[in-house]
Length: 184
Image 1: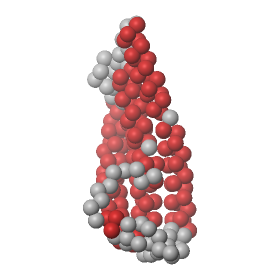
Image 2 (image 1 turned 45 degrees about the vertical axis):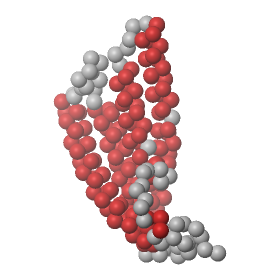
Image 3 (image 1 turned 30 degrees about the vertical axis):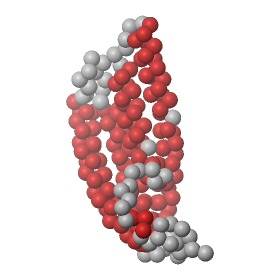
Image 4 (image 1 turned 180 degrees about the horizontal axis):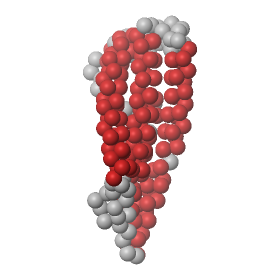
């Protein structure tokens, strides 16, 4: 692959790894909010903001971790015959599914940007009694979608190289048996 593509893949991998690892710690913020909610409901007056803030933190947690979970191959994959294919066959299949994923993420981003623009323009708030502004979480969600889109494009390039029998850097793929075992 050309050097700019290799550099793109490496940069996107580093950015998603950093953002994903930072996002992992958001779970503690969410747990803290929910713990405060439980304590305040038990001993004091219930807070009206805790559940919705926990939902916002959870949404940010999983949307910002999407690209990183792609890197770790932690997404669910339907595997009926896939594991029996050669590495090149798997890569070809992944290239086709990457095109579908990229198309979906572009449409999702288009809708997210439209919704974010509306939230910023009209000061959209939630319908709850707390009524927080929706723009901050929508901006975070669009950022997470962009990161996942960039990661999907990086995977497309990596799979395209593998479908051609090469690594991203241009070296031949190691010979493996169907199912992933390396040949000796």
